[in-house]
Image 1 (spheres, rainbow, N blue to C red):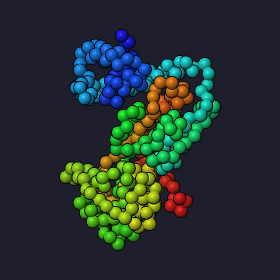
Image 2 (spheres, helix red, strand yellow):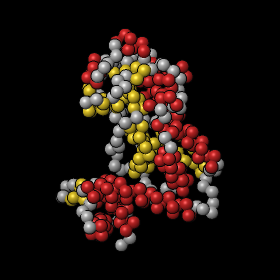
Image 3 (cartoon, rainbow, N blue to C red):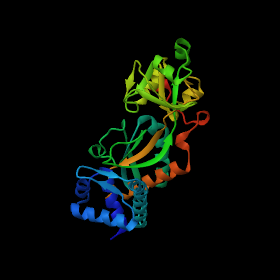
Image 4 (cartoon, rainbow, N blue to C red):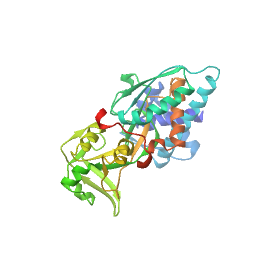
Length: 315
């Protein structure tokens, strides 16, 4: 059997935790899917999946192969697309989804750099909160920033990570006092991102280890920008990726709260529905993103050298 094909079939089973669903997506008989996975296990000398009559789960070896095998498949697809497209320049439109703040601060410069090398490719940027239906909106891929992703029906490639910060205005801290330890956050007006903290718990790591604190406040939002603006106006304490508030901190509009404690960092993913029939221009852009995020730290700008966030008076 073709080992690469067997790995592809295994990843489909592993992502959906279902032989039946994988068979439907691949257009194969379920028995043939089972045969490929069994052959792969025998070839590797390791059990990859634990099967019961009601469920399929991954073994430790299976989890490892899912991560490395997905990368192998994507790399192969990129090479194949490069060979096929070597004789002609890629062209067409790429439709990409992105959170508004990340799109403005980081995706736009990346698109500009990519377009300089690929002038025949145009972009349509769709601003979303990470819950958009990629297929329904006709997107080629979407950048999502979250502690983790739960949608196993999509392929997600981790590009990098970004730290978060707790911030508040000087006016708020002067009026309400500054918390000195995580437990004191429960006594403050905490502005919560409903997508990133759906249960209203903030987890911080610092002296004494990891602490989770249940917080509450006068405002919740599924986007970070309204919470940032509320913090700038003295409404309360909010949590944001560092690129969103770096300029505000440098210019003393906001202060870092509990600087000795690090909130849970967020991962940055490129999410897309399938490698099959992915246009060469999209593969090329995905590889470009991978290389830029791997070889530079431009999306993890530090407070003293960050890309500017959008000033409050312009929003």
